[in-house]
Length: 280
Ligand code: AMP
Image 1 (tube, rainbow, N blue to C red):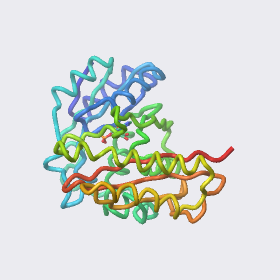
Image 2: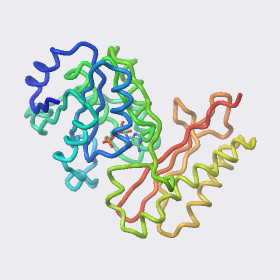
Image 3: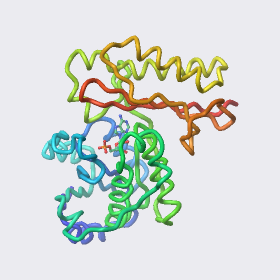
């Protein structure tokens, strides 16, 4: 496994490979990230992973400075997972003085994470576009955990004609349903015990949908009710949205829907989602 910190070095090593699978991450790796790596390993002759805590996707009052980091541990996990190339650039390598071009999707900034975190998707789309240009992958792997991110990346690839295939991997969860996240380490024990309420709310709404409910508001109300029973959980948003436009739905139609939640436990903000497949 080669570990590269500059774009020039990465490009030089990358040239020795043909088709490449790519997994962009912010590090502090867990089984969710490793599921993406395993899928890439299974589908591609070689695999590259990036570890970069991207400052442009964090708001001024967000957790950029304290985002958990452990590169030595991450590299050991990636080596054991059979990764070929790892790109770990310092911030100045990705954003040198004078940097001034961004990828923006105004529609994404109006809903869900985009509305809650101004500038977040500008940062995500910009860094992923740069990483695609540096890594030149055949396929790139993203987690369903960040549902709106998958929509933003697919739209960017389509709109900017980027020659990469996007693969979405299902969310990996703890035994009690909590979606794995690097941010879970921030949770105090009582918050950790309360955190599976996101999963319970999503699952209850999915069951109600399976039983025939098609009202978006009825499903939002059900999820709000379940969250309200957990005093440590403070909902940020509760959404039943169109799976592609991510606009809130009054009625769920033939395309199905995306259920999604953002919930605060004090300073810790968790997100999770569930895809309601189109009715047969
Ligand atoms: P991050 O390091 O949080 O930027 O995540 C890097 C990639 O891993 C993104 O595509 C995430 O959606 C994905 N990911 C994070 N958590 C999970 C999870 N629990 N299950 C599946 N994929 C995940």
